[in-house]
Length: 101
Length: 521
Image (tube, rainbow over the protein chains, first blue to last red):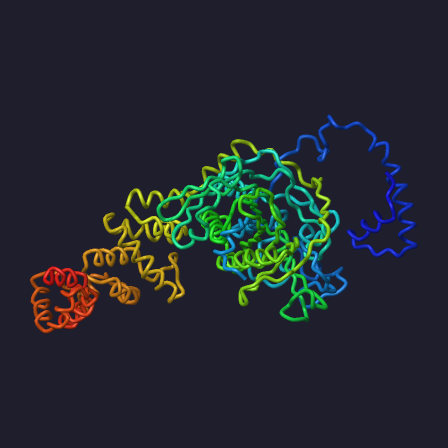
């Protein structure tokens, strides 16, 4: 089940990662190596096995009370941002939207 | 474009709704202890969880889970004990962690139902020949009645998720994103508990969609999970609509309608979209699957986004959130907290007090209004319940609007309203006079009976006093008397007016009318 260069281009697109043709070729080789490593797992017969989404045994219904807890101070929240304006994070506009539909 | 009526003669519109409701009555966000923000300064309520910082661990808010279970119970859903949270991936800065936490194939609430009563003018949107069953399996029957029809609308699911941040797009016209150069982000709203309800495609007219949304809002208000404001966006609705030829069972291509911030917009947006699609199809074109934005000012929809490829959200179970296996005890304790729901309340008003269906529905729909009305009925006599309802709906509500008040902080008391309704019921004042008395009640705090007497507003209903007035007017107006007897019965209005003038406005117009008719017959 080898990934084509077009598959990798589509994945990069989804991940909003810009790759030039050279990088795309290299990434296709690299990703196919990664998929090959996964092959033994892909080959396993798991039809009858319940998926293990949550490995922590029988932990269920973990909830908290609806009580406020102190969050981050504004300076701390904005500290690592590339750009800010007033109290807000500032980002370049993203054309064509892309929010939840 | 053809009118909606013309279009629906040949086409069937298939409508489904997706309704997002923020759980605004909670204190904190869905997965962290940040306070829910209402009008706070940007980024005043943020933490590593809602900013998506590495290593932060989310923990679900118990009250949010209780709220969605209540929402499910109130809309006839089955409560799924076992469900999970999923990650829905997308890259956009309104969700810094690059995925929205939502639910997968199994939601907390599945397969519910709301019964709609479509009456009056709005019922005529559904043409006479429309299908009597909508699901193909008998589960959505249309029952026609005298003044309209009843139809159950199936709810596919209600799932729990979280809201995204607010983006403020700078530059460009009207803050439209396509023109903006930069955007500012405020994460206060990010992580707000949100429930999404999805209907089955059972709705057939814009009026039904509007009624469904109104009914849902009344239920959510009553169970107290949200302030349900379409205007401020705490309740949001997307409409999916497609057309197919009458009798056809295959679904046509749908468009999705966004930016609906009022019940009227929901109706008008869907109406426009149905008419637009009919025009496209009848001219031999094809409807494109796209998202359209409703412009209420211009009453039209415009393309927002064309879906060329299916979105791949790479939905998978969130390993950071433990699965749910709700106990019967948990579900029953939610059920025990449910108040009387609007439909039950409406039925009680009709059965106990003989209220008209529309009045009972309106009063029962808003918890504070219902409480005020019930207090007024309790302060007076049950026999005056309809008079009290009339006064509240056609007088007191207008007064509240004018005063910028509401039932919770009413400037007139339920006792005053009860007393005033009794005066109207006894024909001691007209409805118009009752409306004049309301501001005086508010100002003086006096009993309406006292106000009416002090100001000489009490109407005379005693025939001994009214008859001489009637006789005098008839003697004075031989022309009108002749016209009436020749069949021009409308002239009675003029004669009543004369009687009112003669009695200096104190005589009861209804009784004058009756006495005049007796004398003239």
